[in-house]
Image (tube, rainbow, N blue to C red; front, top):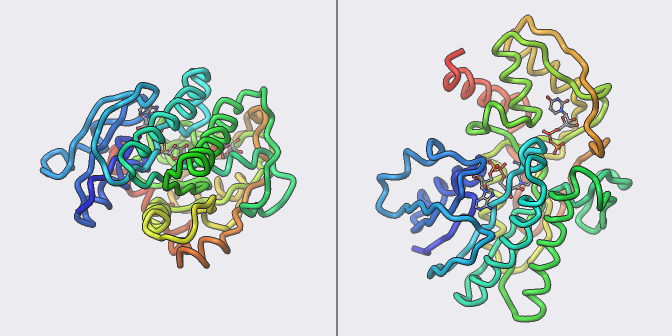
Length: 311
Ligand code: NAD
Ligand code: UDP
């Protein structure tokens, strides 16, 4: 049994990760300031004697004894990370420094939840880990993109300079149960709109692409990355299936059977035109590849929103 710290543990991905680590027989400390996380996400874990919740902000240092750290604390939806961009940058950068300091003191292995956003609006397609990205340093998405890029830099410098045992994964758009209905990300937006019979808001002409990974696949990749000894990363974790936002909207309409129509709304600034991971490294080093296709994952997510929103 390991003592494992999960920052951002009350969020969408963090709560699934806490659940998985408890199932694997570990002692889990979930740390979260509840900015976009919810106690409801972890309510079912609170009775477990091996689970502990601490309300704490990662921009402040913390003194704990742990064996492993998963650093997920950071709002992930563009709407949420642009709400207070200065805070977002602090969360990524000061949060990484504080957690790396903790890893250094406790000699624990630490995994960073980085993002496909480090590739920016990519000029190389699909994106391998060797691509350095094309990121606007001063735009509306920069607080998140550059914050995550500097966090990766800090991880590798803490490794090179003081020998911290790091792992870095780059997560591509992940979806599933426990996304916030008003989170602003495309999968939750489309499903909630379809279930309410409202128009589906496709931004721009809808030809921009994304690759969507179901949450269970993602968590499995994350845990495998932490467990292996060979690769520090960065390793892409995502589903290489690539869809336009129009295709996604049509799939959601078909699967929900809604009478909703598609409407177009303005494209947010610096919205990447295309995104698709190369996952050869994950296949080779982690023996990992996604198992849940988009249709299956959407069905599970639709069932979740139907139940929680009573629609
Ligand atoms: P989320 O917003 O549901 O979870 C983030 C969690 O971090 C929330 O519980 C939030 O309250 C917490 N948090 C935010 N700022 C904090 C702070 N200063 N101190 C302590 N806790 C704080 O988002 P998610 O989708 O679960 O994403 C989790 C991580 O994975 C994030 O680091 C995100 O950048 C990364 N990621 C997610 C995706 C995705 O598609 N879901 C893609 C790429 C990267
Ligand atoms: N998007 C959309 N309608 C919405 C929400 C998002 O068309 O209601 C588009 C958005 O412009 C982007 C894609 O869907 O091209 C994915 O957006 P999301 O916010 O989920 O994540 P991103 O990959 O941009 O961080």
